[in-house]
Amino acid sequence: MTKVIGLTGGIGSGKTTVANYFEEMDVPVYIADDGAKRVMQSKNILAEVKSAFGGNVFDGEVLDRAKLAQVVFNDKEQLAKLNSIVHPAVKLDFEEWVKGHKNYEYVIYEAAILFESGRYKECDVIITVTAPEEVRIDRVIKRDKTTREQVLSRMKMQWDDEKRISKSNFVINNNNLKNAREEVVKILKILNIKQKQS
View 1 (spheres, rainbow, N blue to C red):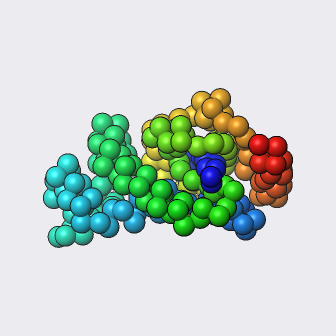
View 2: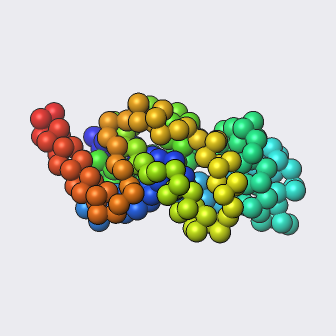
C-alpha cells in the first residue's frame, strides 16, 4: 500500500523547491495546485464555477483566473465556496494519480492548504516547510510581481507556521537551500527505517 507524505507550508516557504528535491530522489510528487488547474479545465467544474460565481469571472467561455482570484482571496466565504467545488475533484484526480504510482513505497502530496482543506487527515506523514516571514514575503513579491499588502492578505488566509508545525511529523527550514536539501535526505533515511520496521 503506497503511503502518502503531505508536504505543506505557507506561501513563499519554498514547498516547490523541497518537492523538487524529493522528486530528484525518486519520490513521485503530486502538486495540488497543478491538479486544481487541470480539473478546472473540465466542463463540469467550469459549469459549477459559473453557477457559483457568475459570468463576471469568465472572458467569454474561458475562466479568468485573475478575476476569480480577486473574488476569493479576500473573502473566506467565497474561497470556501470555490474550494467546495475544486477540492473533491482534486481528491479524485490524486487518487487516480496514485494508482499509476502504486509500485512506490510512498508519494508526496504537495498542497499549500493541506490543513485548511482537511486533506492532512488522509496523509501518513506530514512535513511542513518554513522560512522567516520577511524571506517569504520577498520571494512572493519577486515571483508573482505583486505587492507586500497582497502577500500579507494571502498569508492571513492560511494557517500560521506554529499551528502547522503542531500537527506535523517533520519540519524543514528553507531559508538555506543546501540545508533544506540535507533535511530532505535525513527525512528519507528516517522514513526508510520506519518502512523496514513496519
